[in-house]
Amino acid sequence: MFYGEYKHTIDAKGRLFIPVKLREELGEKFMLSKGLDKCVCIYPMQAWNEFTERLEKLPVAKERRIRRYFYSGAYECTLDAQGRIILSQMYRDFASLEKDVVIVGNRTHLEIWSEAEWEKEQQFINNEDIIKELEELDF
Image 1 (tube, helix red, strand yellow):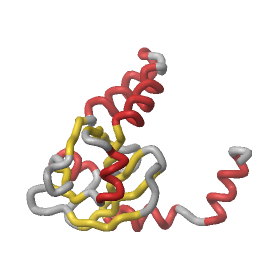
Image 2: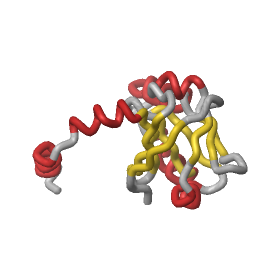
Image 3: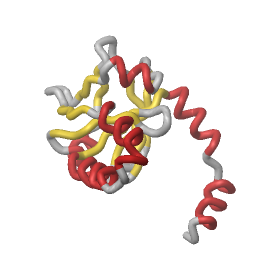
C-alpha cells in the first residue's frame, strides 16, 4: 500500500529518483500513465492489471475514449541502477513537471505532481469537504 508524500527533483534529463521504500512495492516492472488530475500515475503491475480489467468491462461503444486516454498514455517502466525513472517529455508537459515534484501515495498507486500543482490540489482538500463526501458515500 502506498501512502505519504516525498519531495524530489527531476534532473535535466527527465530522471526522477524513487525512494527505496516505494521501489520495493513497485517491483521490477511497473506502468506509468496519465492521471485524471494533472499528475502522472505509477502502478505496480498487479494494480495496473486490476485497473485495466475494470476498463475492459466498460462497453466499447460508450467508453472507447476512456480506454484511449489511459492506454495511449501508458508505458511499461523500470528503474535504472540508481533507482530513477525517466519521465518522457509527454508526461512532463501533461503534468507541468519541471524540477520540483511531489510523489504522493494513493493506496494502490503513486502519483507524481509538480510541487506547484500539488499545492493547488491541497487547497481543495479540507476536513469539512472530506467529511461531507464520506457522509454522501455512507462511510
